[in-house]
Length: 240
Image 1 (tube, rainbow, N blue to C red):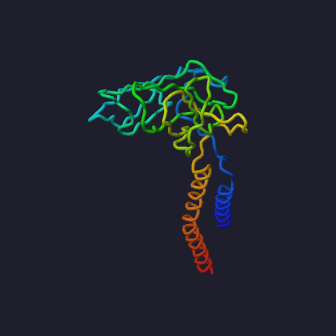
Image 2 (image 1 turned 90 degrees about the vertical axis):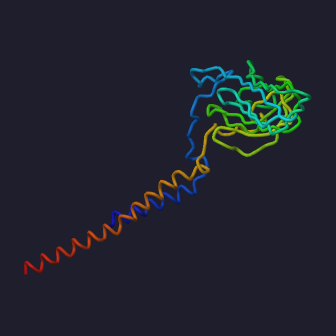
């Protein structure tokens, strides 16, 4: 009984400790597939070149349909709302995504993803949502940047909250060159790690389950202890 009580107390203490630990303490989950680099970092090991993407967006009643264009490796996706392009009599609008075969290093930005060029054969007239996948081998990006030329200048896109693990989202009203990174004037963010529930939920859930199991076993332990005590008393009576 004493042992079970101590175990329950330890599990409860673990819950409290997990709750108080700063987010990121339990990080360490990585992407499901290795990132495909244009210029792989030394720690990347074997590398596969990044993919390109293409789509022909259908025009219906003078308006383009809602559509997403992405590379075959899924490292960049751009989503368009209905009627996003000035079609000017077209039956389709072609969009192409191509990874740049070089790795620009602007003085004011540190890129942690490949640079991608997105073009279309019709002018964009509505904002498009853009998503970039990044790796855990470099610091996680703070923002997505855009430029008309890979040599810059690079413009910071509107900042949005993080979404799925290892992805960063934003929106753009122009196509061009895109990459994710952080300002070189700032301290590099922590490595690209993923938290589960802010880095705390997983250990808390495990600890709670431990507490539940331990507490569920207490009545059974008490019952067995009581039966054992009753059996001892009966033996004493018979012996007397």
